Amino acid sequence: MEPNKLDGMPKEGFVRGPSTRASSARVCKYWSQLALDSLWEDLNSLMPLLNLLLGPLIKDGSSGHYYLIVRNLLLTGSVCGGISAMLIGHDGASTPLGFADSNARLWKADILPNLRELHCIIERDCVALSTLALTPSYLKKLTLLLQRGVSKDIVEQLLKLLVYRTPDLTDLVFRTTHLREVDIGGRLRNWLTTPTKLERITLPQFYLTNTTIQTLSQLISLETIALDADPAIPHSDSPKGAFPIEDSGFHSLFDLHIDLPLPVGSTGLGAPGLFGRLQILTISERRFLSNKDLRISLQAIGSSCPRVVKFYLNLFTDRSATTEPILFDSIQPIFRLRLQTLIVHHDYPICLRKENVEKMGRYWGQLQQLSLCPDPRAYTLTEQPHCTPLSLLPAFAQHPPNLQSLALFLDKQSVPSYNGDLLPPHQLEQLTALSTGTSWVPGGNPYVVGHCIGAICPRIETLSSLPCKWRVQNDLENESVRQGDWAAVEVLVKLVGLSSQTMKKRLESAEKRR
Image (cartoon, rainbow, N blue to C red; front, top):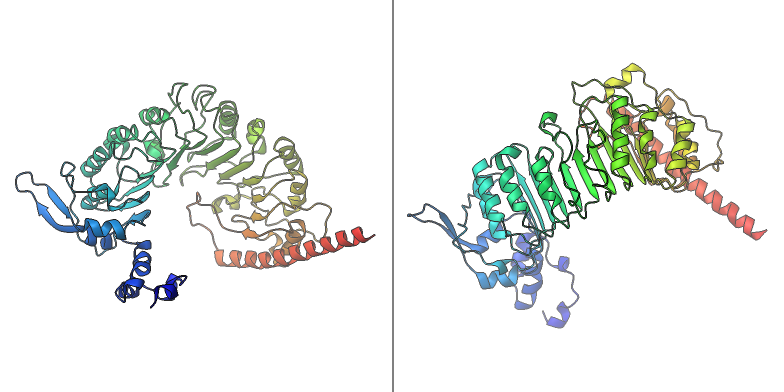
């Protein structure tokens, strides 16, 4: 094919699968470049690259170390130059790769000159140290997922070798469920002192100890600390007490996710003003928490974090814990915050009244996202808790007016009334997402509920009836029936909402012609 006929041809025009792309690259020199670019553009396994890069596995008889011999450096420099992100995972067919000794210097930094993002699912010891070959100094994002097949000694060696190898790292995700902080925490903290440009970090929830917090507080660019919470981890492994950090720490932190035992008291989040720059705060507490303890904790949070605008509170307890419903008065201490997002999850639903909605509107005039216990556990529903009636929905149209996302647990017994009005006095004009959590269709009548919601919320794009990611228990009965009812509601909501918008536009147009 002539070069001028090849220009502008889409890659998918002649390359479909890996075998087809490889065959296309051998047709002629004009096809070769496009076919190779497409072939190496997206790798779902490390093996093709390693087969290209590596020669035989050689054992040094004197030291006992294994060495991987790099080959085809000139070829890899041209073929792999476009790879910017890679996932290393165990595909079931891989053979042990051994590892390159840290002093052998067999690896060249220019093998993947544009690699900026590396995700490693490490299941075996031999793969752990092999990943060092693909951690150049210019790497920006690194994810290390340590499975149970990786030993403590190998992880310690990996962390030791990573020191000073990631000076430009900005995003780090480090996950493990079987290695305790006391096992490898020292090596981890030693490594974390070197990536001075680190902005976001995710650690296992039980790794955020006092010494680790001290280390993180000295990273001047750190903006986000997230905990990879695992419900299987006992709460006793979580950190205890206040954060012993000097006022000079956490220069840039504005997003904190933490599994923090409550109540925290007046010093639970450190000295006053220490977290004064926080704008996003996520707290998880999986033990029983009374309304009194919750109120004390929220008072402390309101004082320590006055600039928080997004607040996420997970209060799902362990299976054996006993709880009590949240009273609206318990969350009043955070009215001092100028919240734009409030997400609260709890074993029990929360009962809202019209005056509660009006009060939220007065204090949180800029509230855009609100979720109040939409997915309680099934066993709590047998105790006849008070829930939020659907008739309260118009109150949210007045207070607050900018709501874009709303999640509530609706009262199943509260039968809504609908008079057929497509333009009720109060509509949630900005609301595009509504979640009903694990609630059933009120009154068991999808037709009436769909028309009622569609008229009040004419711009709904998504209607969700699924529990949140924090709710891990699968204790819902007749789930297919419940989901089917809400699916019927969603269809009606969108049809009624479209009719309401059309009628409103026609009335506005007629008004202008007068």
